[in-house]
Image 1 (tube, rainbow, N blue to C red):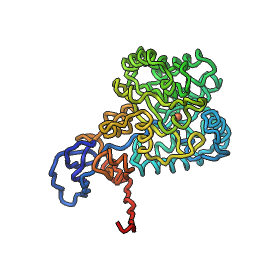
Image 2: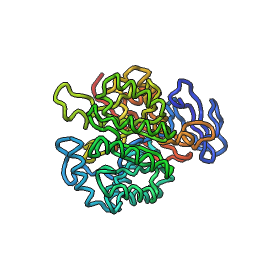
Image 3: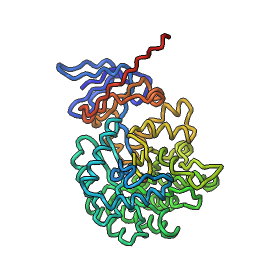
Image 4: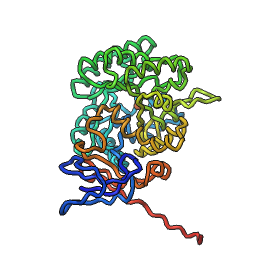
Length: 413
Ligand code: FE2
């Protein structure tokens, strides 16, 4: 396959990209197609590596209204509703909804997904369904599964055993939720316990960490210190870290030093964080988001996730990462022209770093030929005008193609 006239990675220069045997073979202007080679005319549009979904829960998606709507919009009501809904889980139910979600994601240019999966259910129904599905769809999308102890690994007395079982069944990543444990001390202990497990079983770490507007919720420093001392920082991620939006600046400054030294990753979920955050405030009302701009300026890796699509936490969403970026740049004041042009990195290269897949990711000769063609001359226009992913290409084969809708105006001017 030869893709002509594209702006690779949103760079100003136009070039061509050739693919052979599922890998990028040449990147240079004016390449000539081989006899019979498929040619895609990029028409001066942007070619990026596929979008990375850094944080989603495939087991809970598309359950909005089941068994009831989250009318208060709080995280706590959401968790209660999920407690009811998960009683009814079957493998088929999980697989059907997860597949429908993956179709939405692929349509919007995603090929790499990190999905948390609730392991509080002693039957581990959702985990088994998603382990099967991961294998079934691996030619089209890569799925990393995170064992997520929704009820707290120390709070729910069965959870430690279930975590070990989930690891043995094949999860890629160890999750956690220290701020939801009974006490501050339990939160810290859960972090130590889970990072020890990760080291023992050679797994990545991604915890829901400090997803609360409480400036006293400081599990992130414990996780970062553990990551640093164990030398596993680039394999460790804190998701949400929204309490950071409420920390005082002196403490945040000290924390940033530790985060930088640890080399760990932060995942923000701008849509869900803005929706669930600030719920206990009257006015002034906090934004409920981590410090995306300051972390990025400090050289700490931040990527974005959707977290929830049409479920008890978030009634909206359709798998389009442009919505996630749009919310993130507005809420955290990343609206400078160059910040907007660069914002694709939150859902591409930064996401690949979070998922620890950098070696196999990116548009470069020798790497797997995974890429997306956006219907825009640069990322600013793609974001601003919600442009389509025209082609989603995996190992040199088109796995999704979108034809833009056309509008005809009858205004007389
Ligand atoms: Fe989450």
